[in-house]
Image 1 (cartoon, rainbow over the protein chains, first blue to last red):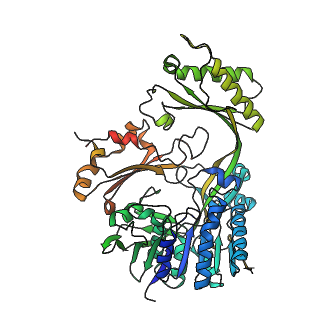
Image 2 (tube, each protein chain N blue to C red):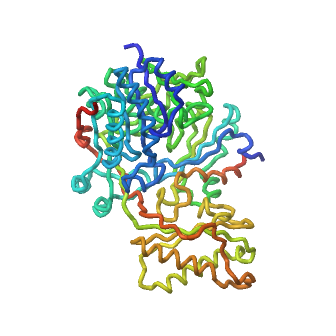
Length: 451
Length: 100
């Protein structure tokens, strides 16, 4: 054991990579190809609905090269947070793509599929036993919220993926996984320092986003040794700099010195980032501090209704000067007209005023033209359509004080003006679950596929 | 009085999970980082965003990147009703008013 090389082809499976970079990575003879496929960033819809936020054809394009390279070189391919959110529908969606590709490529592989869905009744029992706690600003979890979640997953740690490697998997398709695990599992299995392996994974999971100039669709190579790791790009267009790598440690996290994950926390207080020649960066000194017990992060999303939107512009300065009043009066008129429908939400985004920052906007002075998005969310699509339509027509003809443009208040770019936007979800579980066994909630299904 | 934006390399915002919004300010070198960092306080951030000081969860100085990281409670969980910025990527501009 002198060093272990890990190829991260892209920031998210489906975001793509230049074949020249990927080939340069293969030329370095990597021991594993690993890719993170997920994020909570695109919002709760994808976890709740079971859909992927990446497109099937883009994921298939990436996987074609990854599968072919991994199987012909006899190195493992590990995919984490399949389908973007890692619940069963996402994993099965990704598995179907892999099986299709194996047939097309005329290859076969030993595939380990690791599900990460959490049984609702099990979680209710754990909640009652006091083994669930809120994460940050999320409130206490309730039995009702657990029941309401459309999909409910836990982020797996290293252990289930290491088990799948030990069992001889050539392709590992993991459900929701702590991002660094797909990169760190093989090194930790081979006895490398988990702190360095996980920290390297933390950076590799976003691939060339940690380079300068950054890119979400280019490769990054990590080389792990006994007491350090080295990161480098595989394209002459970009390089790793001390600042680009250290800065990436800040990305999407609240505390760069302390990065919590399953089983413990990465401690970066003594981490050193050192610039090496050739656009490479050496990292050392990171520690792993185990927590008192093993905690898994839970994520759930629940259906809160159906959305309809209407987009319209306003150019009249008299209307713009009293836009808040107009919106308030329109909402009153809608409420008055549909007194039996209390269960809807009507919101008007006001671009050109505070559409981007809402209540955080320090300068809500309107511009010379406004873009309005009238949004109704209701228990059924039909009610949402009704509320949005009525709000739109009311605002179009609303007679505000001092009005001169009596033919209509709104400029619509589209006919039809309203768009039924479908189901709306919210994150309703974001909590920690204490477990005794890091593997028991993540069943591994092993099977041969292809040819 | 000088503006932080005139010496910062990066001023950005992003979700840190669905319940928090995090801001990164990065400086070109140790000298500027040391000159500016202590001027960024919870009080100033709360005033810029018109939020209570206890909604500013942390201000962390990260020397390896010459960076100051500020994290606040999101106005609502990402994607919840009334959302204006699912990724939280365009919430940084009030920081352009920071002075030191």
